[in-house]
Structures are given as C-alpha cells and as structure tokens.
Length: 80
Image 1 (tube, rainbow, N blue to C red):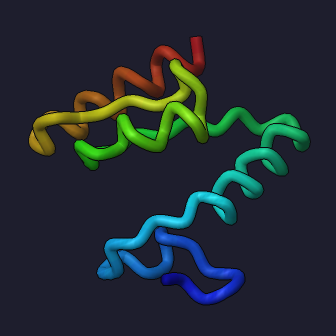
Image 2 (image 1 turned 90 degrees about the vertical axis):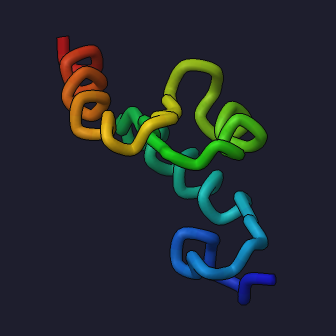
C-alpha cells in the first residue's frame, strides 16, 4: 500500500494502485483549464482510466513499437 501523499506513479514496482491522489491532481488540473490526456501501454488501464479520464481522454497502445506514431497522432487530434 502506498504511503500517504504518494501514488502509483511514484512507486512503479508496487502492484497496488491508489487512484485517489491522481484523481485529485486531475480535478485540480481541469479547474485550472488544463485538459489532461493519457496514453498508456498498460493493458489493465481499461479497468481504471475511464473512471479517471472519462471515456475519450485516454488511449491504450497495445503494441509499444507503435507508441511514437500514436503519440504523434494523438497530438495532432488534440491540437487541431
């Protein structure tokens, strides 16, 4: 389990995921006019990212070799 004030992004070798801290950061970002978007290679992301980012503000890259293409494509979609 993560220590108070830490989240899963800071302790990558620990299997426990605690979205509360990350969710609070996302809410704060949205309140400041920042539009968070997540690109992940985590196949389990379907279980938690829709709750954090909504249905469309994240994407899963099944093949890590396609990550550079997916990042470029996502950037184009977000900035047009």
